[in-house]
Amino acid sequence: MATTGLCLGWVVLASTAATAQERPVLPRLEPHKCWFKTPRGATASCHLLSVPENRAIPDGRVVKLPVAILKSSAGDRREADPVIYLAGGPGEAPLAASSPGVDPLKDGDWWHSTAAIRRNRNFIFIGQRGAQLSRPALQCDDIASPKTRLSRTGGHFDAVEDERRAMIKCRAELERRGIDVAQYRTPALADDVADLARALDLTKVNLYGVSYGTRWALEVMRRHPTLVRAAILDSAYPPQINGDQEEVDAVRRAFERLFTTCADDTWCARTYPTLRADLEALVAKLDRTPIKLRLKLAHGRATASIDGTKLMLILLHVMRLGGDDIGRLPTTIARTARGNYAALRFFAQDLEQTEGGIVETPIEQMAGLYYSIECRETTAFVDGPARERAIAQAGIYGLVARSNTGPALCPVWRVPAADPAERQPVHSAVPTLLLSGSYDWLTPSAWAEVAKQSLPNAQHVEFRAMGHAVTANDDCAETLLAQFVNQPDPARVPACVGTNAPPKFTDKPPK
Image (cartoon, rainbow, N blue to C red; front, side, top):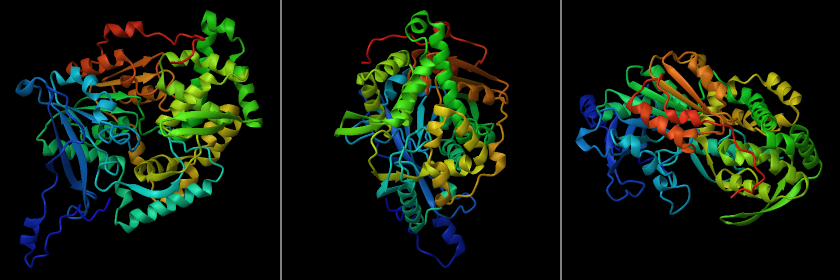
């Protein structure tokens, strides 16, 4: 997308005062056609929020961010403090269609899932600067680059150099367009939220962040403490945690959870008494002789070569999604070892359809916002030798971290490391609800406990059969979200939490 349309082409006037009058006052909110269809009986408005790319240069490049306001059914009787949703990634764009012809809000079930909140408040989406629909978008087209996943790990490709060349090409293209990629960072995104509140004349807002969106929300709480009435942090990723550094431990703990829960279940313990050894033997077998799976995908059929690393990725994908399928993992492992690949194929197809990384096929587009933030705020602070030692000592539980291409790619993306002060804990008395899933290896439940240490007015609820983004996958978590917004009391625990149970193990095939 060309960036020339972002900066207003004002004529240079002789008078400095006159020039100042011609410059737009920022932040500025302009009406825009919505990126989705509004259901019958519901109302919404869409906008573009104009903010400075670099706030130290207020008369420089302008960034425009997509904003959508799902209106409260209470109309003029609604509460004055809306909920602002902060997406994950970095780089997720909930207002952008996942594929041509798909309505983004219908695809994400946003109208239904926000209904309880919208009885009293507006629900607002703000796009991340540099993500899809923002202007500019840190996006490069027609380049050869492997698929990436939200898990912060690149696809398992032998030729990392091909990926590096694509990164260099993308970075050069953004530079040619005059985009300062160093300004696409969490503190700037936090200030964008404050600018949105200013443009809407809001004195208080509620923040609802998921995954990376929780780090974004915490930075808003740090930089604009009086703005936030309450915060819901689903799958917390606090700034003092380094995801790359903790990756090996997070993967190991997820599998330890599976082994322990199976051992505590009478049926699972009897049926799969050597689950850990069975998995480790299967990974070793697939590393010696990968299996070929024919996958049926939306765009056609494709063949995937499944080695030990990809098997681990598929199993971790199931854990990330959470729910009933976690209980099918022991059976999936056992049947795969016996040469029955039906369940493995089902889960591999789902992973490839949603995130990629199974079929090693280049894509034609690279999203640079992810690298601008993660290279600056995570990879720059990794203790490389310690990470390599952890991978070497972890056996099969280090395979996923070994496939992480960030350390090799970040040097060519060329963004400065974050100020170390940004990586310090966020201290805030804002009422905060922390939600996590026991099987979440992307943002483990232990990270929520780390965040809670500096949030004295917080409660943490862990869901024992869930993975990542619990509010999107668990009815009780969705209930907690709405109730906490209405009554932000960390001491209040709704009754549905009492039904919180570990996954049920079964040999029934996935549906």
